[in-house]
Amino acid sequence: MNSDSSDLQAFKGSILFFTDDPDQLDAEQAVRYYEKGLLLVEDGIVKAVENFDELSPTLPPDTEVTDYSGQLIIPGFVDTHIHYPQTDIVASYGKQLLDWLENYAFPREGMFSDLTYAEEVAEFFLQELARNGTTTAQVMSTVHEHAADILLQKSLEKNLRMITGKTLMNCNAPEYLLDGPSMGFDSSLKLAEKWHGTGRLSYAVTPRFAVTSTESQLEKAAELFHSRQGLYLHTHLSENLNEIEMIRTLFPWSNDYLDVYERFGLVGPRATFAHAIHLSDSEIDRLAISGSSISFCPTSNLFIGSGLFNLERVTAAGIPVGMATDIGGGTSFSMLKTLAEAYKVLQLQGQSLSALKAFYLATLGGARALGLADQIGSFLPGREADFTVLNVNATPLIERRIAVTQTLEERLFVLMMLGDDRSITQTYIMGKAA
Ligand code: GUN
Ligand code: ZN
Image (cartoon, rainbow, N blue to C red):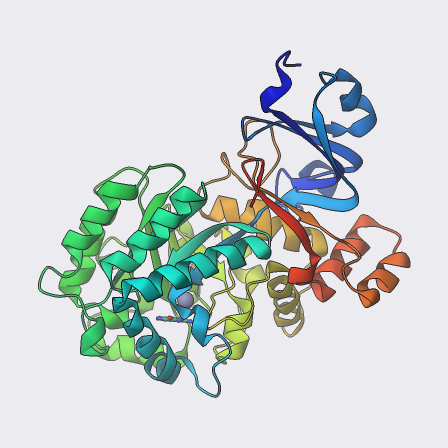
């Protein structure tokens, strides 16, 4: 072990992480669980995870050990699709997608022309992510350059691994939310040059969805997406039946919704499509071949009444899937609550989401969907030490229910069905309390 322990931190507790999809591999191989474990972090990077009794005698004597005995330490949650400017419209009544956008999302996003408001929301948003145990997110912003800029600035100050970009939209939305003649290209390029690869930040080229971009803007978006190593592409796909109908009208030459993105080169590794509920077999095959990812947004898909995402079908095709809260179409920042709704969405289709699979999707699965599995999502040595400490007894009911569980899987299932922000004891960003 390191003879200089000043930058060495140790965290004691029950430790869980995944090295693979527990549904694909023998669960024994995919799941690492240490009932009495020790997570060793050096300079913000995971150095080792082992049984406490084996690892602790090897530590330099003055190593500070933070004791979370009886609690569960897992990699931080990865939210693959969320809108920060929609924080203040979460739980808005009574509309489906296109009316919901018109009545709630667009007017609220218009308020982000005010930098002071954007800054205040960005601060609250990042704190709320941490309070819910989420350490990485792919975030939609607004059309305003400064709204993405302030989120990136704050993420850098907090040393967060975040992915975001300015939203591109230049038609079929209120005038006050439309990109001007440069079609958002100049602002996007400026932001990408300033932030992509700075600290732990990545830039996502973000056409909102094909409905709100002209063909020229989609073309420009693709040009930017392919212009630099590691840029992301973040958009929506096939969420709502009226939206799909609109795509048919707006792009009469297209064979289907995905065809529009494909035609302009807006698919491939590091391209994420949120929702992807109403897909044909051909669209699923093509998404898989392209190496694109999908965000599963259960609370949003239920709340906006969009439909039931078929996880089994998409996973069988080999498309990486990450979990997403999709605030503010989604109704909770909590990944635990999101997993609970995912379970119910799949139940309605005769599919069962095991607790192991659910926690995999919310951690390593999300990291894989974003191409970040070498950086985050597990506690393999060398990974960035973003983690969450879960209180498994956060409420009287959970405590009673946990008391009669026998296995780890049962406890995880109770946690995902009954847990929420109250279950999060502490979130750590590269070994530092958030
Ligand atoms: N499709 C285009 N924009 C949005 C949005 O803001 N939220 C959701 N849920 N779907 C969208
Ligand atoms: Zn969305």
